[in-house]
Picture 1 (cartoon, rainbow, N blue to C red):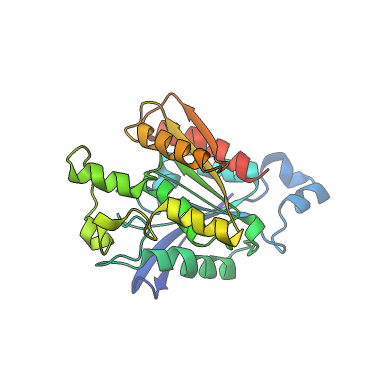
Picture 2: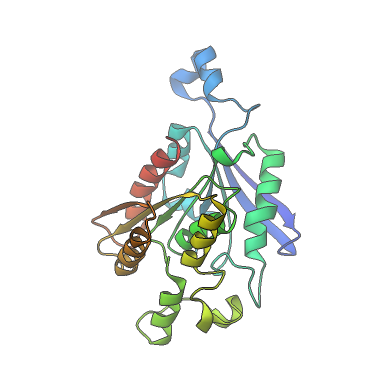
Length: 265
């Protein structure tokens, strides 16, 4: 297994950025086999890739430090790309970094030019936890021509509801809403609203498949149920899973395996 950490200059963010990339390589008994192993590691064709997003307070190293993502990437034969988004909700911030542009355009262009990663939509997936769960669906639904599937773990998926709960004092968080969004009080129906983005995908008939998982003890559990039900009422086939668990790495480390299995079918 190759875990590659690199630093490059981002024109979108106007600074140097750190990236972790996992490239599966033959290990153990695979190292002494022949054609079957070579077929499993077709670097010339390009490996399927998962862009894996962190949550609030996290960074490009979170998944590597707190989960077994290296082992899972090896098991499912996929590359994994991880970069930092600060607490931006993966937006081009009103007062801050252009993280949407970085993640949707600049990062894929950079890694597919350097690493043995497929550029095909059918091989391109995105997943994340909490803020990154929202980010995964947001980036996929904003760019449906680029991503085949998107997975959210404990995602803050209803951005308008979250802002409303924070303003009422029912939730706390690290987000400076006015720095991220031009008019956070008008998020419902905006280009940051996942329901609006899905309706736009439906009009174009290019729709990423969606996966959603949340723990039953998670503070975002009721939001995830609401999002699931609202999508299902609209006829959207979201793959939904839940289980005992809280907003923590025990849950995310377990369910990222389910998400990867769903992606790589």
